[in-house]
Image 1: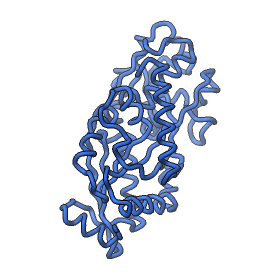
Image 2 (image 1 turned 60 degrees about the vertical axis):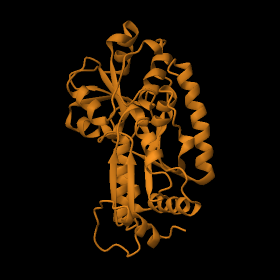
Image 3 (image 1 turned 180 degrees about the vertical axis):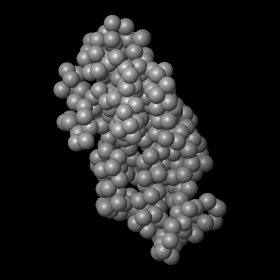
Length: 321
C-alpha cells in the first residue's frame, strides 16, 4: 500500500529532483507531474498551479515537472505510458484537448491506456484579436469569415482540441463550411501568443487565462467568450449574445500511468480531493478564471467515456475526424 511514507521513499529511490518547501510533514510525498505540452499553455499552468497549491498545503514536499509538447499531447502520451508504467507517484495533466487530438491524429495510444484520477477544472474559451485589428465585434469577424475563411487565420492549441472545435462550431453556426477555415495549431500557448502579438494571425482562441495579462495590458482585445453568461471582470459579450449560438467549456484533469496499484490510485485520488477542497486552490481558480469542477472515481471514468464519444461526434460533424 502506498502510504505517504512509502510514497516518499519510492520517489526518492528514483532520484527525482525536487524543490522542497519549509516545514513539511515528515511523511509528505514527492510528486512527478508530466505535461504533454510545451510550457506556457493551459496544461502547463495547471501543473504549476497544482505544484504550488500542493506544496502550500503541505500535501507534497516537492515535485518535478516535465514538459513534452506536440500534437495535442499525442507526442507525450506514449512516452508517459511507457516510461512511467506502474509508477504511482506520477500524474499527467490532460483534458478535452487531448481527447480531440487523439481522435483527429488517429493516435495509436489512447486514454483508456492510462488511469483516470480526477477532473479538476472547466474553463470557458475566449476569442481575441490584436489591439490594432479591424475586427471590433464578433459580427465583424464573422463577416470576414463568410467572405473568405482562408483569409481569417486563427491561432490556438493543437489540431482537434477545444480551440479548434470552438472555431469549427462558430463557423458552422454562421453558415461557413468548417472544413474551409484556416486554423493554425501551436504546441504551446506561448507560441500562439507570439503569433497573435506579431500580427501573424487574425485572431486567437484559448482559455481566457492564457490571454488575460495581454488583455489587461491593452495589446489584445476580447471579442467574445464561450461561457453561458458574461464573466465578471471581462468586458466582452458571450458568443450567444453576439448571435453565434455556441457554448463551450474546456475541462482539464489528471491521470496516473497504467498498471498502478489500487492503493497508489486511491492515494492519488485522495491527494486531488484534498487539493480541490483547499482555500489555496479556490483562490488560484478565481485568479485564473477557472471553474473548479472536481470529479473522481467511477464518476470521472464514466464522464471520460461519454466525453470521448461526444467529441468524436463533433469532430466527424466538422470534418476533422
